[in-house]
Every structure is written in structure tokens, then in C-alpha cells.
Amino acid sequence: MIVYTMLLKQFIKQNSYRLYSNQSNIIYSSQKAADLLQKPSDTLQVYDDYLTDNEYNNFLKEIDGYMKRKRYEYSHWDDAIHGYRESEKSEWNTENQQVLSRIRQFAFDDPKQTLVHVHVLDIAKDGYIKPHIDAIRYCGTTITGLSFLSSSIMRLVHKDDKTLIANILLKPKSLYILKNIARFHFTHEILKDQESYFNNLHIPRNRRLSIICRNMPLDPTAG
Image (cartoon, rainbow, N blue to C red; front, side):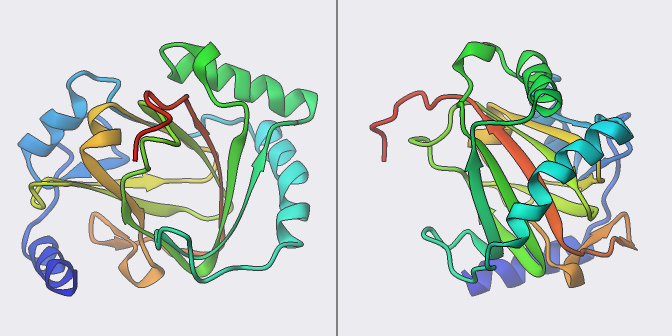
């Protein structure tokens, strides 16, 4: 793992990223990486300002207070997250439930197959998410996330060809969608502050909140 991390950092340092698309919030290591994640076009999507200011503030009012009452943890059951607190939430106020319903209709092939419990994840300023692919027994083909408080960089790396990389700028109020190939064939991670660069520009990482919707697993008994 240490050798892989060193090689990946060396590759990233030596290779410039380009847009390879008309989305200014995603840069790719190569045209091949862009093709994999853009064909079909709904494989990887990022929408800046998906939330209005009012919607953004409504979500923060509902989740920020009770998340702050939890303690940050620095170990995780599958070693995927460092410096986090989390919750699963199934009941929301009327305004926020309407937004979540809108996301389910917009992002998922079958909105009725989405999980009732929504994952709320709070990452500390010194926290980060390590490269991982979500276990198939917990999640199906699609993952969506709303971002709050701090901008951050999500990195996707192909599980077999480590030169196929996408760096994604996630701003507050944005929505990202990972589907099919992006979900199953690429690891995803949230970078540490000292690694948080987009197009050679440092993107300061502070405390980050996200609200994550998933659909039902294809095989709940899978390992």
C-alpha cells in the first residue's frame, strides 16, 4: 500500500491534468480516463449550485447541530475514513424531504429503489476519506452526494489501471453522482488539506458535511 501511494503521488506530480470535457469542475489524467467516465454521460456528473441558498441553509439547520454533538472518530470499521462522525437519517423536515425526493427522481434510474436511510457524514478539518469502493452489499449502482461547509477534492482512480484518474472539485451546494463504472470500477476518496489541489490551485479543506443517497444493493448477501 505504501509503495502504491508513493507511485501514485509520483505519477500525479509528473502528469498534468486537463479538462477533456466541458465540465470545469472535473479534470482527468487522460482522454481515456475521460472517455470511461463520460460514456454514457450519466456515469459521473457534478452540478455546482444544485441547492439554492435557502435549501442549503435549511439542510444545515437540520443536521449541523446534532452532528456537532457527536464525537469525531479516528478509526473506521473498514478503515476507509479518518476523522469523522456520521449518522443515518430517515426523517427530514418537509422542505428537505422535498429536495431529497427531487434528487431521487433526478439521479436514480428507479427512485423507488433508493434506500430510505440517508447517510450524513461529517469530516473534520484534519479528516479525510481513503480510496475505497463501497461494499456492494450496502449499496447498488448509484451514489449521490450534497456538499456543505468546505470545498473539497474527490479523486477517482481506476481499480486496475492507476493512471486513470479524475479529480473533482466539490463546492458547497454542489451535487455529485457516481453511477455504474464510476461506482464499481473506480475508488473514490476525499483528499487531505495538504493534498487538496485542483488544477495546481490549493483548495483549502476545512470541516466538511455531506448528505449521501444510495440505491438498494443488487445482492444484499454479497460479500
